[in-house]
Length: 377
Ligand SMILES: [Ca+2]
Ligand SMILES: [Ca+2]
Ligand SMILES: [Ca+2]
Ligand SMILES: [Ca+2]
Image (cartoon, rainbow, N blue to C red):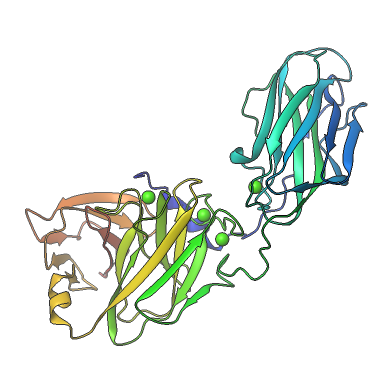
């Protein structure tokens, strides 16, 4: 899907793993609207909690815990109610099935809208068959005068937030999965390369570009290579791909490649380039099966040299020339801010003199090729 949130590139070195939001979350008053009852019978154990009096902030009830099996169907009963006056509100429950420390919108298992006194709200849900084994949390939230969907990290005057413990069993054992973050990448040792995977379990989002779980590959270019082509064409979901150096500089990226649907493909130049991460994720929260293929072009292969898009001189102190037209080429700052587009079908020369010295990206109209340009003055 063509809707880049390039500013998110800046998040590359932010905290990789989030804790559950508990500070400045939930009600600031103990009065009125409050969850009155939470009941669930697990594969083993059960929770039978009754609320009131009201509590300010998040109630950590994670020592109250049930075991749930991946693929199993369960019933959660919640009575959204009050410890005082009766006022209209809404309620919502999430289970952090993917254990990423967030109660994500896709992890909502039920909602309520009404005015106490209300009857018990039954919430039937199925634990995803590919849920990973281990401990996680369930958050129950009620917000007086709120609207759905609720922000699980929101703060407000009246209501409840309570976190319970959940232990997932019979699911996927993620021990030994590699590639979840830059500290444990999947190593690309040879070309051509192919790797098939599913990012919908065992992988978490490390705040790269989109909230979708991302998978890191690490590749050391061989001096005999001059470029590498990377493709996710054929993936089961809307993908996004980035190439980033060890300092977090974005070398190339692609959302939707030509003749590749909403899947991604790109080519990046390896001459003078050290190790890079190739990061695979979904657009938005999209996830599923993919095959990453990598192939290299080698120095001295004239056919490829000629057909490849190149700019010169680079670095430049003014204009650059392209060796071939690439449609409406787009110029970006390194932080992803779009600066302008140039019709390379009309002119193969682009004047960069209006721009400040620094590094820029020039991307082809089809988004498949990105060249980094250094402007010196
Ligand atoms: Ca989650
Ligand atoms: Ca990840
Ligand atoms: Ca991501
Ligand atoms: Ca895409």
